[in-house]
Image 1 (cartoon, rainbow, N blue to C red):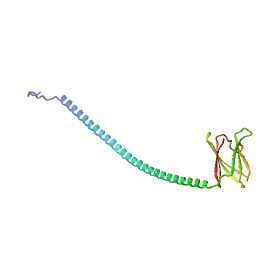
Image 2: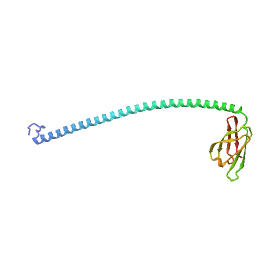
Image 3: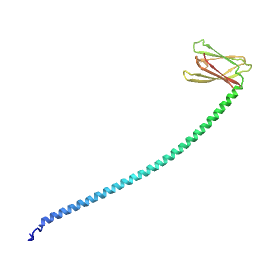
Image 4: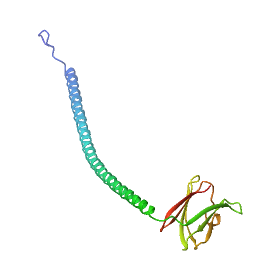
Length: 191
């Protein structure tokens, strides 16, 4: 012990104990610094990954915007082409109507009778001209949404019948359009 008041000399056991505590604190501080360094490194790596992801997202967005711009341009061109085609088609339809109105009436009389076998109606076509005619028949059933086209040849002053055995079973309300290149079209609704 020391004779000076307030100043004690620690014993070797106390010195060893303080040295151990100091060493333990230093080790803990060193571990804490290592943990902070590791945590900082992990945050830096995460930030680099997020930065890379943001760059990739920006690139993807630019590519998508370029694709959308190209698609809009192509859509505008397609709409323009469709409008051009629509106007050409309208012009052709007007021309066809004008040329069709200049043609003579179709010299064919159309009538209907009941089938002898009870299967719908039979259309009867009578050629009133001195020439044989090859007709195009466009038949539509609006109720069943069925449509079909047929060809029918009629001799001069001849009569031909057309019905279920020829491919169409006529019913009331069916729409029949008869065409020939040299004459106006004839349209009839089955009674």
